Image (cartoon, rainbow, N blue to C red):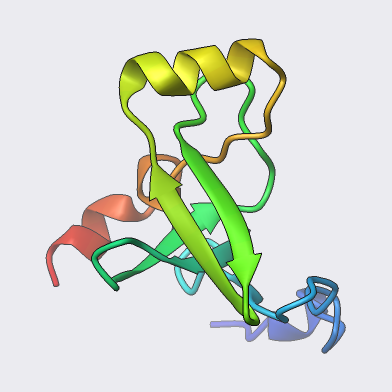
Length: 103
Ligand SMILES: [Zn+2]
C-alpha cells in the first residue's frame, strides 16, 4: 500500500486563531472542531462553523475556557431567527460518529 500521508498538509497553527486556542480538528474526519465545556463539566466537540438551520448550541469564552450551552428547541429557534450564531455538536455531523459512540 502506498503511504500518501504527505498529501494532507496541515500547517501547525492553522487552527490556533481562537482567543483560547481551543480550535482543533476531529481525530476521525479531520474537520475543524471546537472543544467546549458543558454545564455538566463535560467536554463536547462542536462544529466550528455556526449552523443557521440546525444550530442549538451557543458558546462563549470565559477565563480562557470555551463553554457550550445546549439550548432547548424553542429557544434555539428563537435565537436562530435573531441571527445569533448557534453551533451543532460534531457528533451529529461527523461522518465517523458511529465509531465514536462505541467507546
Ligand atoms: Zn469528525
